[in-house]
Length: 105
Image: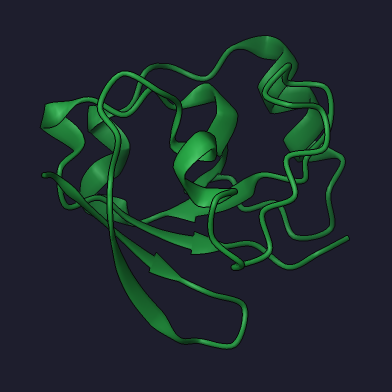
């Protein structure tokens, strides 16, 4: 099974099995690492905000306007790396992806 490496808000690193065919958010919210995903993946909140490690950014689908608008409102927004995990479908090419849970706002 493909893995996801997650760095939690305390700096702890965790390797978990990714589920192909669902959003990254679906996997992250199953664990107690701080991803609340309040809107359930509708791209209307930022409670699934993560920082994607540089080597993986070019493998992600392009960011849509609504995602970027939500992220740019956050104090923790990073122009390179911030993504909403609900907008990242987890597929085989992302096996091994590294993400860090963004600070809670």
